[in-house]
Image 1 (cartoon, one colour):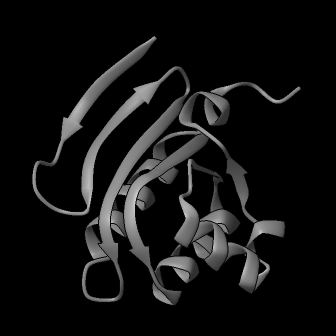
Image 2 (tube, helix red, strand yellow):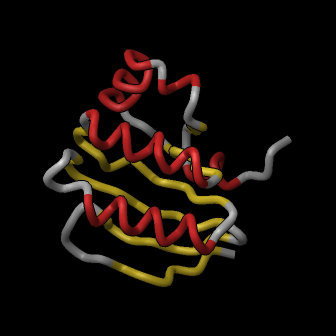
Length: 116
């Protein structure tokens, strides 16, 4: 069961919702040190309250090293799953080796599926 519990309107956090035991944070736009704070806050709150946190990055058009560092920090404190990275983020993850550390999934439903 998916239940939307919070919407953010404009900004880098499009919406957040519960999906079973997991919490999904939908991010969008350009993420760098100047725009990252709302997303980092939403993910940190989710990490405190839910065993699995999925960040839907489908609508992210740009992410820099500060975005990557935030994901790596959160990966250390929670079961963070990154869903649907586009070409730019996939390249960033591959070039930095983060694709071998982060849990990457092709879609949100894949990220929400229980491990096999």
